[in-house]
Length: 171
Ligand SMILES: [Zn+2]
Image 1: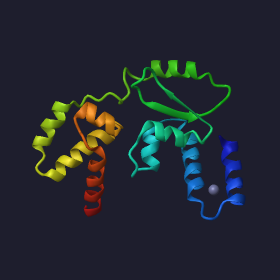
Image 2: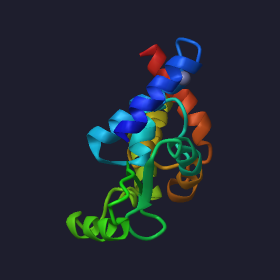
Image 3: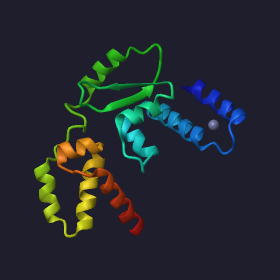
Image 4: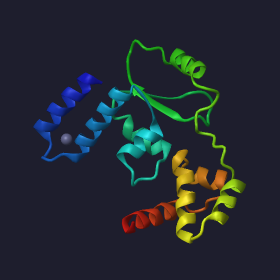
């Protein structure tokens, strides 16, 4: 990864027009991964693209431009993790270790149910509060639009996040 950062910087300086925000962002992401060592793909995505809804396949395509390994901890519904690609690392074993180290479950599967969210929304005093509540529920556990619908009965996550953007701009 460190070589990649050095060479990519050089290549960009010689071949791309200034300023080259695309490469800059990519390099910032690369540095972030080096620093964090292992980071959840959804967390990484939200740190760099806060205005783009997280979708794991799109995020993967983008991040895989870097020399990284992306893996799930265990099972299909666990969160994706990103780490620097090292040829000497046995990722199969790394996953097994991670599984032993982390307490039972990482966030991914939320304790917040449709019913609980519904109850909380009843408590919220305004439509704006309800919007923020729903959005926070999705964002905090990294749900995609489809998951938001399935798990929490939120049908239009895209619209919801736009509303939140507006509310934040007004705040
Ligand atoms: Zn560039």
